[in-house]
Every structure is written in structure tokens, then in C-alpha cells.
Image 1 (spheres, one colour):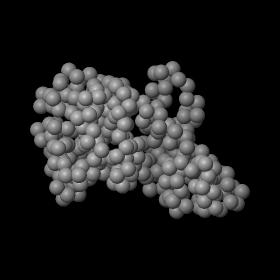
Image 2 (cartoon, helix red, strand yellow; image 1 turned 45 degrees about the vertical axis):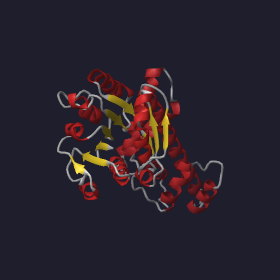
Image 3 (cartoon, one colour; image 1 turned 90 degrees about the vertical axis):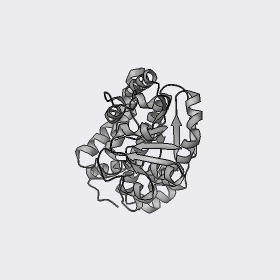
Length: 295
């Protein structure tokens, strides 16, 4: 299949790699130059502008940083993918984590312009993508989903069509508020134990063998043992997703008291210079407050 991938951050690059490896004819674009070099070496074609995607592809995947970036690519006057005349009858798949509000604007523009639109946010990080274990949540017309299901499974095997409209957006935000909350509780668990002289390796050995050992917790044990906060997903991006979850909750009249506290804690990470580290920097913030050294 001819497919374009727009947005070559860590996730977009990994998705493009999977598609190239699966034998698709892949075109790529990123706002800043240089990120496509490795993909071009693997056989991808680099676009000069995002709107060129429809000239080369039947399907265009966007994986961008935030709602504004999606609006810039999909809704820009005269060149937005959602309403470009060259996109009529083709399929736009957005895999970013963005607000349901902006996604709704994209859906309206796509409908008016004859572009088929699927929301397909993901659960996982670049390592999960490259390992072939990504979860993809899709919502939109079932016929659109069916037409690209095989393509999505080439990116990740766990593909769910969860309903119409922006259902996938809401589920993704609900999942991420649980990720953020779990990370804070894991950080508090480590900080409490270490304050009383418990060795981190012994603590995490027990946690990893307990009923609390979710895949997320198990995935974080290795980096915590190594005191490694290399970002798989930064504190800043997690704060963005928590913000979106709280916005959606406000729109639905649902209080999220724990998530509101976690939002403040993530902001504290950002304000103290930890925003570009992995979101488990929540532990570093706690250690600083407690006067603990890491390890």
C-alpha cells in the first residue's frame, strides 16, 4: 500500500520503520529536516511538504506532538490534509494523542472534503512499536476501519475498533490517566521504602512478583534499578495528556480528583527541570522533597 507518515518524532519514526519493513511504499515528512535520513536510507521517500502526501499515497498517517500540530497539518487553509481536493476518497489516520475538540474539527473538514477519517491513538512507546507489540485504538466508520485494518496490524498486532466518533480519543486519555497515576504510586512506593533503608532492588523484586505487577510496572523496574530516566514518554508530554483528560472530564461533568493531583505533581517536575525526562521523574521529585539521594 502507498502510505505517508507525517511527524517523525520517536513514535512516528518507529511507525514508519514498521511500515517500511512490512513492504509498504512509504513517504515521510517532518516539520524539521534531518529526521527522515535513516528512513530514506531504508527505502522511504521524503516529502518536501505535508500536503504532498496525497499526491503519493492513498493513506496518510499523522503522528504529531499535540492538538495544534494536528490542526496545522490537517486544517491549514488551501493545504490541510482533511479538506485538500487531492485527498478526496483517500484515508487520513491520526494516531496522535490530541483533544476530542480538535479531532472533531478535523472530522468535520474531512467529511466536507470527501476525505475518510479514522482516529487511531496508540498505547505504547517506541520500543513497544519496534518490538511489534503496539496497541492501537481506532474509532470512526467501521467501513473505513476495515479498509485499513491490515495496515494498522502491520504497525501493531493489538488493534481494536472501539466505536464511532472520538471514542478512541477518550479511551486513550482514560488509559493515560491510569498510567500517570500508577507512576506516581510506584514513585511513592520506592520513596517510602528507601526512606526506611530498604534496598531498591529488594523492593522491586517483591513488587514485580506481586499482584501489583502490571505490565507497566514491570516495564519500569529495569530503568528504576538503573536510575535511568531516559524518556520513553516525557513528564512534559504526560502532563499534556493529563491536561486533555481533565478537559474531557470537565466537558462530561466528571470530577477526577486523583488525576488533578497528579497533574500538579507532573507540573512540579516540569517546573524543577525534569520535564524532558521520563515521567518516572516523579520519583526524582519526591526524592528532592524528602532530601533523599537517588538509588
